[in-house]
Length: 346
Image 1: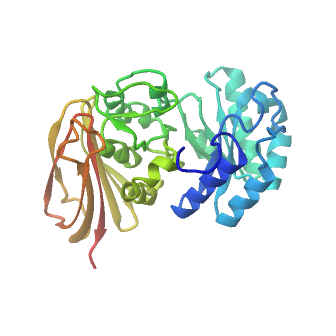
Image 2: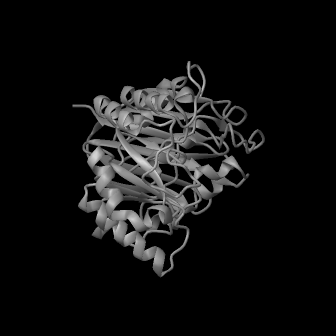
Image 3: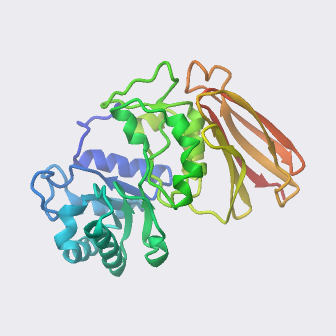
């Protein structure tokens, strides 16, 4: 982070700053990620001295922001009942369980057992580092996400083809259920400018590609990828993605081809969010809006800017009106995307 008067890291001041940011932008939770508990000691009940956990929970409660704890599965495995009872009692809202990374009998038994006990103590679960879902969330609806996906964090240490992956996974992995991808970076790079930098990671593709992922991907719990210092410089885009729901009344895939592009429409109440992304090939799309149930909508649209093929952060915002008989034409830059919100005009 930058522009703060404290040393950023795994400490109380940093997480209070995150809580303030969440409160200011209507975000419900903050994850205390790896490092809040000593990573080499294997004690789920021990907190590093730089973190005042009780103070953070109390501060979050004051700001209406819940705290989620990250944990390695084999550290919490032998103490599931005690850990869920203890952390629920002090006000923790859920756990992000990581590094399961297998689907043998022992791992599957843990996944079922942890979800059951967490539900008993009114805790939700985000299974990170996890095999793909197989319907378990229908038995335990407190399970919100499963990773089982090549998430955005991979770009911190490698150079995969994420725009290609992102227009492939919805047709394959996402058919199985929700995923834990951590989208929404505003540090955007073209194919030529991308570098894997662990201390200052960037995403492949355009700003609008990243914004669109929050509509296209199924994830009842969305963990935003970037830090508050970056988001605060881009308040217009942040306001939009912070407003995107994570649960939906209806979903329609309006266009798509595996490995090339996808356009998804999702309904929340009377509002419709429509988003599309492409691989590294630029393309023009025409979107048929005749499915819309109302006659007239006000549209807030974010599209790739005219220079997004060279400067991936370039975007254009337009507010206009649409009829449900309209066809919307949009140009997607290489690794590009678009996202729009349609609100009925009464």
